[in-house]
Amino acid sequence: MAAAETASHAAEAASHSGFDLMPVVVLLGAAVIAVPLFRRLGLGSVLGYLAAGLAIGPFGIGLFYDTQAILHVAELGVVMFLFIIGLEMQPSRLWAMRGEIFGLGLAQVGLCIGLLTLVGLALGYPVAQSFVAGTGFVLTSTAIVMQTLEERRSIGLPKGRRIVAILLLEDLAIVPLLALVVFLAPGGEHTSLIDRLMAVGIGLASIAGLVVAGLYLLDPLFRMLGQAKAREVMTAAALFVVLGAALAMQLGGLSMAMGAFLAGVLLSESSFRHQLEADVEPFRGILLGLFFLGVGMSLDLAVIAANLGLIAVAVAGYMIMKIIGIYAVARLFRASQREAIERAVLMAQGGEFAFVLYSAATAEGIINAEANALLTATIIVSMALTPLMVILHDRLIPKPAVSLDGVEAPEDLSASVLLIGFGRFGQIASQPLFASGYTVSIIETDTVAIRDAADFGFKVYYGDGSRLDILHPAGAEDAHLIIVAIDDREACLKIIELVKAEFPLVPVLAHSFDREHAAELVHAGVDWQIRETYESALACAERALELCEVDEEERRRVMEDVRRRDAERFAIELTGGVYDDAARRLVRGNAQRSKAEISPDAR
Image (cartoon, rainbow, N blue to C red):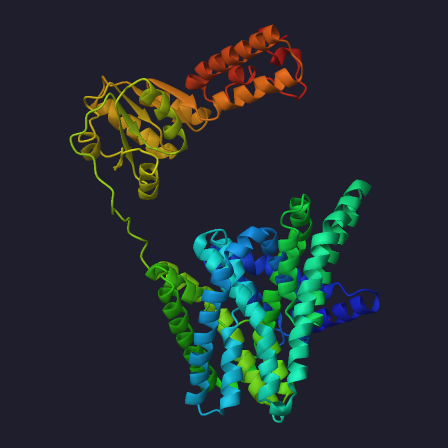
């Protein structure tokens, strides 16, 4: 009690002394403590933010009470997130996605609205209330899904792009859905057609105005600011563009996130794209975390406790029906079963746009304040459950089995050279051998790479070079030499140890990852190895000398000296390691050294 009073007096004193830093410190401290802890536990950063918000909010220890004010500010995090996604979406890519946006997206939204409306009807609510409640739940949380996709590194993958397309359609759908709320309101059927067309026209005009401004004003603006060489003004301009586009869309009745996304798309081909991304990124991360904190604070435990049964049934009903709808549409559009399940789990929750829809429905008299509180609690609970569902999905769904369709295992192969691995290194290494008329047997473990290689005229067999039962039918014993060209450093070492133990007379060539790996391969008995970046780096350096106008004879002397010193250094490292003093003295650097530290031939 005394401690609480002391904290209260400290907070009061801070507020009287000027700007109150206490809320900022508490928010940052909660995130700093909770997010790393939850990530270490394997629960993800989103759940960490939600838990931290619940802990410090009005229904936790009560350090914050005006959670709606925090949410309004934190929505800027979602806005900036969509701007950065837009920067990655060139207009050509977005145009290529039009079928997925208006085909896949419309199908999912339409089916899910129908299914989720049935949930409300089953619970005994009127048609208008059931429709509004279900429609709000259909609008997926862009913040949670995009953050999860980013953590899983799936945004750039085809399955990630399809989810982004659906989210974009849901953002567009907010305008007609708000118009439907007005129509469903008591007396709303008397709203004139002119009013509805005007609302749609204002939205379209906002989009058109933003596109025109982006095409003709943004790039010249940033070019002028870039010439001024004022970095802080560039940052201010980036924020101005993001927030200005969001405001334009909001005034036109569209979502702020849609405006930011369009601004990003319009700047995606600008020469200032990477600068803009670097300027906005820090704000995006902090504000997006603040959004999740605000959602956690908004979880009204009193409302949940008083209506526990109803909210539990609503959350289960809405999430199950939405999962069924998403899965059905995904399979209808020929997604694999694994992708359909993953998409359904990721998008099963309601989202932040539901708050807007429910507020509008309350203002129009379709639902009352109590129903709004219940529906909002339902949405927030579903958002909090999503990270847990993703974790369960990853643990329960088995990893995809390797498809061997159209792929053959090696059997009684015989060739002059056995090439193990057909990635970026192996493909290049094969060309001089084929050009010289040598026969080459190739084995690889990546079935996708095997099928792709067939399109270019290569016959590649499926096999793991670290297994003796694969090496024998692949012809390792009778090969004139074996080239190990895989990217996995540990597997490469294992293969060389196995080959030299079983086929000691067959020369083995390999590429190494770095100096330490090269030493490991030499100790394992490799007959010849080269670091994968060695020759390309030297070629780059020689070209640099040429552009610096160093004459040809001097360039040759310098490159020979570098090669000699590197070979001498590597010979020392084989016995003394990479940190051997004699080896390190052979490295030329830009730090000052004493004369005693410099090798004699470098003076």
